[in-house]
Image (cartoon, rainbow, N blue to C red; front, side, top):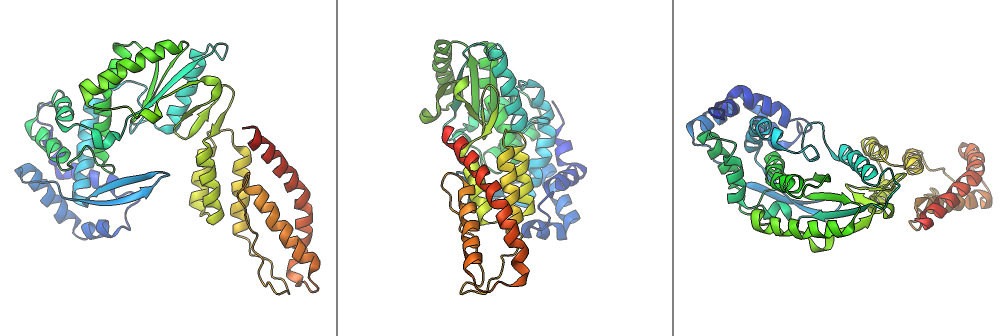
Length: 399
């Protein structure tokens, strides 16, 4: 592919990249600062790229918990615009070479599509749940920080003959000393290019029919566990020799389909799908601290893809009760706040809290008129919620 660098460096492409980049970031301080002189900044960036004087800037480092701690490196606004422009040009070049069952950072893919595809594979491999099906699940150890720059650049060189474009790619790759920074849009594309070598090896040399990958998490499925063991040995050797990567020893799992397959936050069973226990507990814990309408919508969107109607209802209840003012009582306690207790689930704490409130209602000599209607509501809900709690506790204990 020759002479495609000009499409990256053109002001038109950079303005389109700016529009894509700024979505959801308009109120950020660095974005606002860049936007004040937008035209001037874009044209100056275009001239730097065309003149060969562009150099990638420094990164700002910080940590997030999502849910595990991740070390994020954020580039400057001007550099992230270049990332978007480069992604827009490079992605169509490499996309046709990717296998169908690679689901990270690709148009029409994503986590939910990957989980649904895994369900189809498991049912096909198990002959519609009629035979015992085995799964090998693996994870690359510190993947993003272990990507080898020379290997990555050699893979990109095979598809790009434009020297200026390759020089820009090299500039971006070598701007980070160890591997790929988590936070760059280009890191997602480079990760797919790098791991595509493994995909091709598994599909065309090992001839594995049921294989799926999301970034550095991948799954192989077969009826015979011994075959999966042999695959593991060959994959380990390939990663060490060709990509200079290691599998995480604690995240190599062999499991039967009937035991549940944990993948991308969901646990897939033959007849249903559950949310991962850690994710469920984190949702409940965050809900107790207070949910915004946006967070509630996000949680409900995740739960739509699992058998979690009960949890969805309870999150809605928590949100509704958090928006309801606490009744005022003429006792030494002017405001009664239910004491939520996380034991077998949030509902036992919810029951304790409202039973505590009812205790205050019954033992208070004077009750303000504004809460008389709530007395009836508490009595009406008490029996219903107690039955729901017993059902919820029984299900949790069984699992």
